[in-house]
Image (cartoon, rainbow, N blue to C red; front, side):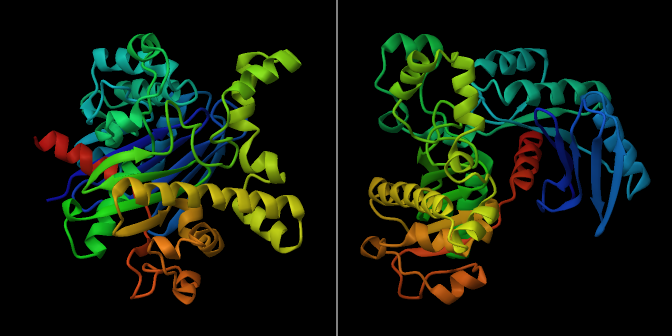
Length: 394
């Protein structure tokens, strides 16, 4: 029996959407609305192998979602006839309150809004999408699925920061972790490829995209993850710094007079691979490095070194791993990043098959490798739809 779910991911000026079967996790239509609020907005809708593009001005999320509804009516099955069971929304930060998907009501809306202090770049946009969809689809359940929820099982030894207790107790300062739907899906798929239950294996998932994180999954439960209070901590990313000495913020404030808002923007939007190489796209960085660009070569080495450090530490944290799974745009498509990130891990049980890695897997380790290394395409929207269907069945 099918369970069609409209999955919406609202960004600061964009909306990604998919029509997904919550039972099979397969998408029948996908779309992206970009540059909302500007004069040159673009909607790209894909259905049955065909692409439709509409260039217009979508002043706000309401106009954007109305254009999405029109795209479904013009290309394929109208949403009114799709048998939708719910509209599901990706919400980045659920804090300590939301550790499972939840049906949205006014109280949940207020709670998500209250968590915006922990994710000022993400939650307000996620919430705007929810509010707009509740008006547009008033008879359908609206379900929020949280990036942080999968990491609710991380123990105190890994999620507590050594900061004053009032910071933790009054202001929610702790490690939360993100990309939870991706880590949940990929770790479960890794177990399936091993022919085992998730409860029988330890998996390290490297979600490498413009945002990137590594998670240690022990028998189906997240026990440590590289991102922290916000998605800024951890790996070097496309435009985010990842781990730095926090005193750098105060040093730059004293030296330059820059406001904390400016420094926040610098670390989130002007740092990372962009700052190291001049490029924010890994494909351009690899191309420049191969052409002899010294800055790109150094940036690539730093990027992969940080991944390698986290993988090595999580092998130790897990007491040994059964699998390492690479996913997301860079993790799925860059054989060079995978090879560099795994170099010198032979002593920890990683024996990479270079030919299989170049071919893209799904298994890229040798048959003799104690740890099986995999490339697994992520399916965050499918996971969100699946969790939504399960919630409504319960």
